[in-house]
Amino acid sequence: MNIVHESFPVGPLQCNCTVIGDSVSGRGYVFDPGGNPERIMAAATRMGLHIEALIHTHAHLDHILAAGEISKQTGAKVCLHRDDLFLWNALEQQCALFGVPYTPVPAPNHWLEHNEELDLLHGCHGCCIHTPGHTPGSMSFHFAAAGLLIAGDTLFLGSVGRTDLPGGNTQQLVHSIQKRLYTLDEGTVVITGHGANTTLGHEMRNNAYVNIRS
Ligand SMILES: [Zn+2]
Ligand SMILES: [Zn+2]
Image (cartoon, rainbow, N blue to C red; front, side, top):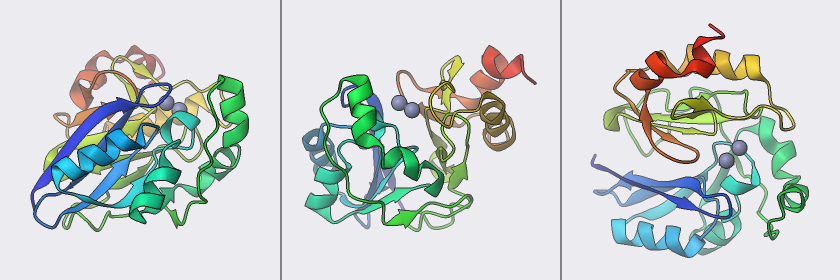
């Protein structure tokens, strides 16, 4: 196993998209295809990966808008936690609310579960972590072998995701971070939903949004 990964901002709200895979087998995943499908496909091609699954940290528009185009080109599975289906189904309204052009997305055809293992990465236990709060179906993804956590809009450098949108819950968000993310190795690099990376250790010591509620 030889994990390669690349993250870059895409789409109308510059969500961090991650292409990750095994350079030996050529099997790859895209996390949060929020836009710019041609850029995502170019990264996958450059990395020598065939995209098998599109995995969404949650169903806000800025994390899912390229799912249709990429699944059409690759046949990749479309993966989501079931609790965010109401947001996925309301994509057109979300786009209207944020003034973003609407692009349809196909229905998800794989439901992510808490503690589900991503079969690409053998021996990487508990890769899918349900971290509700920003949305009810928010998920984080832990690649222990690579020391990497894809946290979506749950945890940011010095901040946390907003909880004032439909289905958001601040108490749940803080609980998810403390009980399900801060229990991982503190050297883990966090790829956040927007903006800079951080590490779990840095957030454990400095993130006031979580600390004042603990
Ligand atoms: Zn979001
Ligand atoms: Zn976002």
